[in-house]
Length: 144
Image (cartoon, rainbow, N blue to C red; front, top):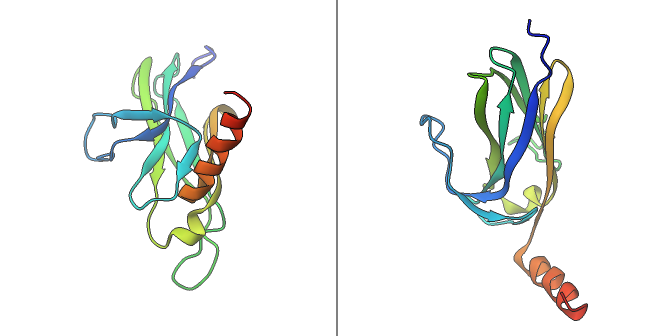
């Protein structure tokens, strides 16, 4: 195993075009934000650049609000493992909103781990569109 410490940088975080998991291409970056409107099929997440970690096992995890399955049971976080493909590799970690919207609203946290250490993470707030307008109005009243 390499003694080099992985160098990981989050390059883009926010809303992306629809991701094709069968393609080598990353989704197109559309908007930098951590406030995600609860809309069907909106894709959000982040792109990380991973260097000095070729062939190392990387674990990804998406912690979501208490999303329930068809039986009403709270689903476990979405997670998995991949091997870092090269010494300068870009990786997209993201998810999309699906029906019903009600159980998708709340805090989502996405992490990447190498050798048991979190090397990148990002949290998002998925909310109804009218909440976004309230947030914008709050900052406008303060002169931003």
